[in-house]
Image 1: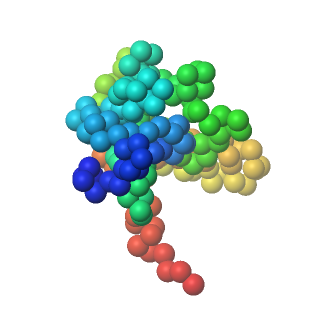
Image 2: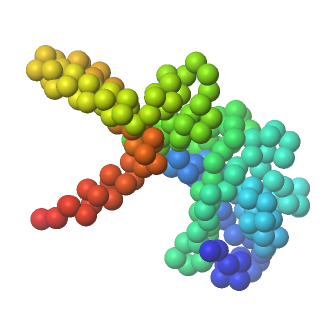
Length: 203
């Protein structure tokens, strides 16, 4: 739990830099500055709030645009004089309309896309929107999901004997349906990663 008293604010202006990172994609979204009051408001409201050096006041990110940043976790750096704020963005963070203020080079989410997909599957499981394939599968239950994973596994094995393109296509289906099965059982990919780490013996 973050304690404001542990943060070292700059003695000249009373501010601490705060790097904002998308909690799902891990993309760096922006850099802002917080004073003690901004940190406290961020903790109390659960929405990222900065101290505007130009306006000389507190301002909540998205207070006019609606593109707020919902706080997930905050941590200090090793010197206690900088913050890393993991947040869930609602809309683009940059005033230009870009996802991130650091958009000079294209950003590739890489494997973190699986986190986005996983979040979506959990949302679909909870809301079960009409017309959604995933809703249909979640309603069908564990046996149907497990059966589908088995079917996709067989198709993946067959595809491996044909071509890389077929293997890529069928393996993607297999991974997607495995993720649905995990979601249905209240599990996440992180659980599989933890299990693999336990089995891994370096060297």
